[in-house]
Amino acid sequence: MTELKIQPAPHVTSILAIAAHPDDIESWCAGTLAQSIDAGSTVRLVLVTSGDKGSSDPMMDRDRLAKIREGEATRAAQALGITDVHFLRHEDGDVEDTRALRGELVEWIRRWRPQVVFTHDPVWLLPPYLAHRDHRIVGRVTLDAIYPATRDPLSFSEHLASGLIPHAVEQVWLFASAQADTFVDSVRDSIARSRCDSPMRARPLIPRNSLPIGVSVRQRSVQWLPCHLQNHS
Ligand SMILES: [Zn+2]
Image (tube, rainbow, N blue to C red; front, side, top):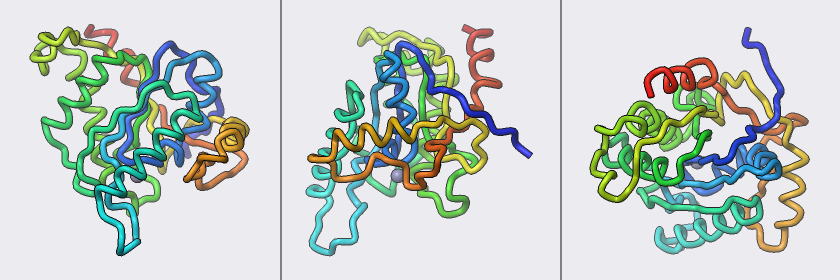
C-alpha cells in the first residue's frame, strides 16, 4: 500500500504549470500553487487548449466559448497571483502527441526556466478509466518535453536562434493522480483566494472534492527525475 505524505507546496524561484484546459489548474492544484506564491515563488501557466468544446449549450459556438473560458482562466490566474498565462490554442478534445506540441512545450519551458513543473499524471489518471484524453496526452507530452528534449541542446536546436538555451527542470509534480502519494493541505489557501475573487469568478477555485486535505499530487519525479537530470547535465 502506498505511504501517504503531507508536505508543504514547493518553495522555489520559478514554477510552471502545464494543463490541458481552462479550469484544470483550479480543479486540481490551485491551493498548492497559492501556497507556493505566498512563499515567494513565481508561478506561470501554459494551457494547451482553450476548452472550446466544453459546453452543453446548443447555441454556443467554439470561438465564443474559447474567449469566455480564456477570460475565466486569466481572471482565476490573476486572483491566484499567477504572473503569466499562455494559451497554445490546440483543439479541445483533439490534442495529439506530436513533435509540434512537444516543441511548443520545450520552447515555453526554455523561455520561463522553471525549477518545478506541475502537470497531469499521464499514467494513473483520476478518475480511472474516465479521465479526459487531453489530460493523458498533455501529461505525457509534458514529461517527454522535460526529459530529455528541454535539457539537450541538439533537441529543438532551432530555439537557439531565438536565444532560448537548454534548461534542466529539477522536479515534476503530477496532479489528478489515482495513485497520489504526496498531499498538500491547501484548502485554506483555496478558500481565501476564492473569497477574494468572488465578484468576478466564474468557476470555483476550490478543488471539486473539497476534502480536509485539498489537492493531491504525485511526486514521482522526486525519485527519478532530479538525479537523472543532474547526472547528465
Ligand atoms: Zn481538463
